[in-house]
Image (cartoon, rainbow, N blue to C red; front, side):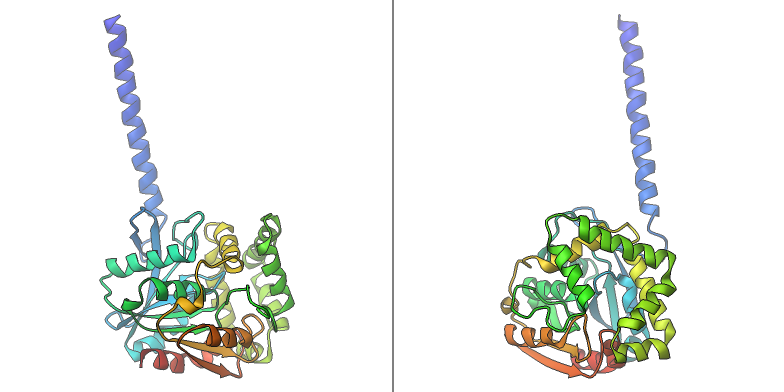
Length: 323
């Protein structure tokens, strides 16, 4: 019996060692999924948060909050102007986007905690914040949770809550449909829309560009025609959002249309608001809403669209933010 027991013990011990070895290999493989050259940190819950850096590495730090269905790559176009202005742009991927690990059931407040951890690990005592489109609620959450760290904050063509009258006024009809689909308890409709978007980006990116040019307002259409690579850059950053599949993009859309967990009136720092008069993705009515709902704000309206606004006014936006 004792001899048999020793064999069983030996096999059991070997099995444990094998499991530990395999877990180590799996962990090492998971780590290698983030290629060299992509920056990331480990958060306190062991999730990885990936980010890109642009501009002057020794400049004033600016956290960039990318739009919905976009990624850390979306702010690459600001690299040159940021270098000229002495700004260090830090652009994180949100949970489940790009190389950042997912966070089930996350809230905007959760992301503010992630950003506070990022600042701590990068030893950033003070930062500027810049949000485009769907990055707006993430910026506002940060403004509520660590206002003492923020030297300035700007929202460009930002998403707004949908719980006020006229929240979709002036919005492109297909975008209204996405809002409606995201608000349903059954995820099947919004998943179908997002999956179709992902498939088009993967298989027919040129068709997506043509579709954009057909439906965009004149300012955006002119921008894409004069600078075709702007559109390709946008598609590349959008495709990166789907690196891990559609779940995180669906999750974000659901966050946009649900209770945000805070009111804009809770923000105690000044927010600069930039909106395009031709924008049908984030119409200027959203700028009016924020200007009324926020305690302290400055509203800038320009004869631009959703994409042309930040491209044509990048220098003015950054100068006003960091002045």
